[in-house]
Image (tube, rainbow, N blue to C red; front, top):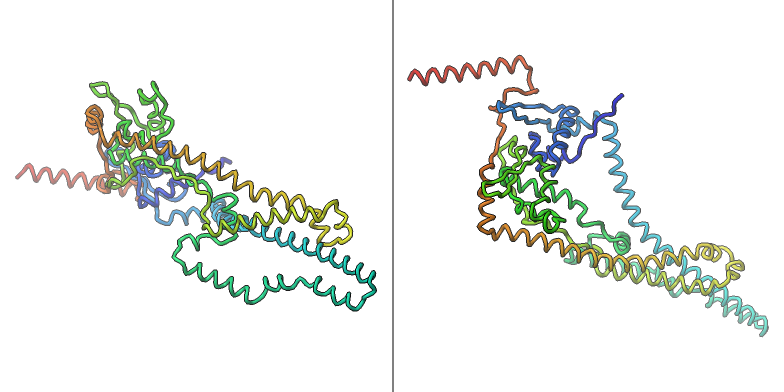
Length: 448
């Protein structure tokens, strides 16, 4: 049994954006897709979601989809339902993964602090017991042991109601502040952001690139010059490649374009597939050039970053102190329990503390290097955009020549000669009636 064809989510989103009646050119420009892929995606979607084909007298084809086509697909495909369920589950899992680094940091600090306290208390208790035996002061020795064992003043302060009240007051103050960043990340998320950042700000760069190019072509009614497209491309090359506009080849391949040569030997580019639309096209705003966003170290607030770095430093220093107290491991053998556990995972604690400080430091310098490259690419694209805004007489001649190929074909309902929405016999009867009416109209006009 042949496998079911794959539905393209970009095609589905474009169909919804364009109000469920589209042409291949509409989808290719809106989604920044290769024309052949757009056509294949539309055929698959129409077949699986109950879409209809509408053929105009000119032979152009439009696709009409029901507005509930996603519901139709969900009911039809188990895989699509599972994917939507997994997307919801993954959002929860990813959130848990993000906060787990903060939880691990807090647990690491608590384990280190408590273990150090246990070792110090045990050492103090041993010294006190030895001193009481030597001085034969059992009663007073017992009284002296209590203040040393009781580490309550610090711990009591940490867990006291007044401490929690102060913390709640601080949270309320942050929530009522005018800082838009304050409520963006909670502290556990901020720790993950401090460590790993918040993802690539240009993850959709290629999608934006081809969508912008498609929009420029559509705004120019399917005919452009290379200078209009260059601000959205990279790696144009030098010398021969740039002079002969070889960088336009991927654009021609994607949108099924073809070069047209003017009498002066200038080249313009014509995209017939993008000149057919299911509804009258209104030019859309598009940026003058493709702009990449710089990497940010973190979206956390400065206070959250300071707190994260401070806790990381506490964790690292605490791990070093704990290592000095554990020594060769004899104290862990004597005390056992928590101390033995901390000794068993000591290198994990120290490694986590080291990584917690070193990963953000390395990432900081990597981001600086990346942003310098991004600035250079943005500057290069901006310079190419200025060429269009300050068009030379030679470039203006090319732009004028391209306008000779500009056109737009709108497939209207009255232009249809065939559609899969209704029975073929009914369409033939309607078409014959339409021809008879037009013929009768011509007779009446000639008679008058």
